[in-house]
Image 1 (cartoon, rainbow, N blue to C red):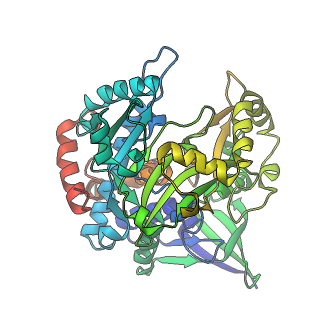
Image 2 (tube, rainbow, N blue to C red):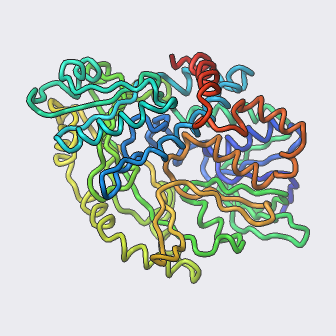
Image 3 (cartoon, rainbow, N blue to C red):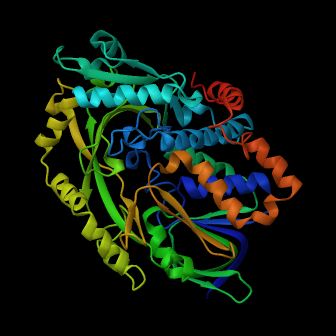
Length: 494
């Protein structure tokens, strides 16, 4: 017998995006009924899981790919400014949730971890120096430090400088109030808090099989319980597809015109993980370098201090690889099945214009453990092979979309695709992902709950959740100072 549940909001996927959107909506209107469905047996087990993402609070402090150099060597810092301001939005909401006891003590999901960029060689040192000068002049990055002094860098990142040739040209920047975020723990805390509400239900082991919009604008979503094989139908006023790599397939199932032309390019990854506790306790920073030529943004190499489920860890990578799966728990047919008449043209055009990327990914996938240790030793010259083992990281599906100039374009950012009537929205893409989840989900609310958002009640509440809402931290230095003092203190990032 098929049962039907009627709800205001259906969230597909139990990752950080769905959990953030549900938490925001619950704070804005506690009468909204919500169901979150997840095909796996646990919450946040795919892209949000700590082992499946970088765990960096992406703020543009150390990620050199956010400040590209143009053809004439001019560095563009606009993306770094945008990402930094967006991360500040996340910190504000997390601070509110900690203060209201909806989230646990900050150490359970976020920890202070200095963010460093490290380069070597004349050209890259020149690039980093110019980047520093541009960023330092802006109030968002006013605390950034820079050094080319070997002994100073050795005090900042001992492992990186041990055994290194003192005659090598090196440089680094540092921000002390960077952060390490266990997005898996954060998401599970969000969901535990939501489960205390009578208006919220979590349904695990349930997979979406069909989405159909009814004449009244509501959505009829058919689920199958993967354990009992029973079928259930949910009648939802709004549907959010926050299923990571699975969101594209679900968006295509919906049939909304806005889904046409979108395709996906999946990328896999691996970490080198340190086994030696003595080495782990000697590194307390995130050190990011420059990506190899042709590498996707998710493959920026970094030697990374992490707190995973409350335990310290040291990772290096990630090493990118080629895959046809859209999820770790997905199918090798995911890529083939995603090809539709509406996206085959842009996908073919993208493959034609990105042969270097494809070649890079295949080359990376074929690298031996020994060659991967060799890359690690560029960062940590005295790395001992026996101290490290390989762990699989998550899958990331980059966006392919129509492009008038080339016919198809490969995007490495995140993008919201929403139906014109605002009854369904999907999040596609990856970088910078979880770090800007609050800003991205506020964008979903603006597009899909615009009428409610215009009410004085929602306006008052949203300013309490995110005090900078409606203003720009990129331009307002005084507001940033006030907000940053609060968030760094509340989240113990000072």
